[in-house]
Length: 98
Image (tube, rainbow, N blue to C red; front, side, top):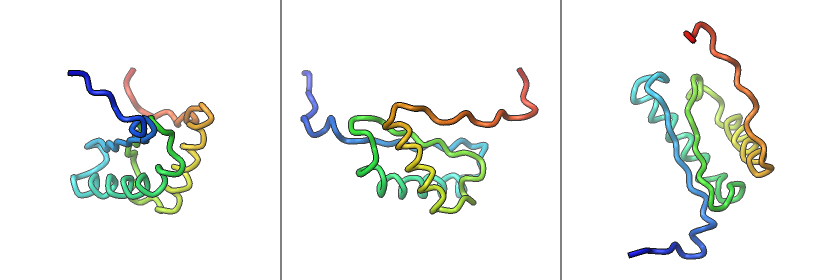
């Protein structure tokens, strides 16, 4: 049986959060995920792209980062996404094998 989503469901902005084990122990990773979810619940309804999936990936130093700065960075990233632009290039990691 094929179930079609309701029309209003097509405009819902969904989100996902992922934090790798490289970041720290479970307590650290869970704290980062809680911070991300709090930001997303507050910002996504107004700034998110309807019908899109938004994924936040926890990076090194995210737990110590100021919450207000995370908010500003997320709003800037959502604005770039709404314009169809990607994220700026990240610094290359040093010392990795190729």
